[in-house]
Length: 124
Image 1 (cartoon, helix red, strand yellow):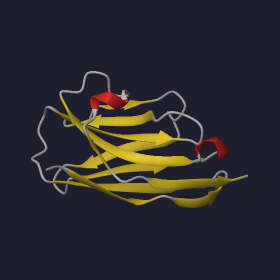
Image 2 (cartoon, rainbow, N blue to C red):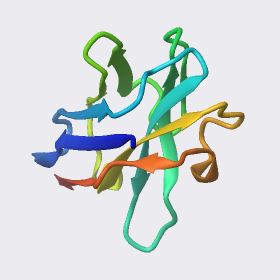
Image 3 (cartoon, one colour):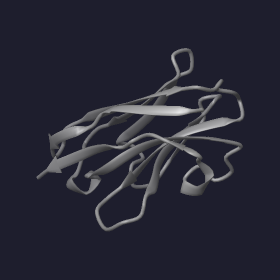
């Protein structure tokens, strides 16, 4: 069974930076797999922020492109999300996710394994 355990997040002032980590265990990571970060702001649906596949090809939502960076250590099976220049509107619960044969990388339903979520608060 695939397990994703997140760490990171926290509180920061606007303009600051945070980094999330997500340890993926329980299954071999193959070239068919994709991992991603999603966020859920209060009153909104969960939405994709960034995704990365086995080859390292990345996809970003327009709202985070240029300020967020997704990366993955394939040897250690750890997924990262570096968030820079944070804005109050970036405040949300952040979730890591893993899926196989993902067609739409920003689509929630494409991913079958999820982390527990970590809270990010950004004060102005």
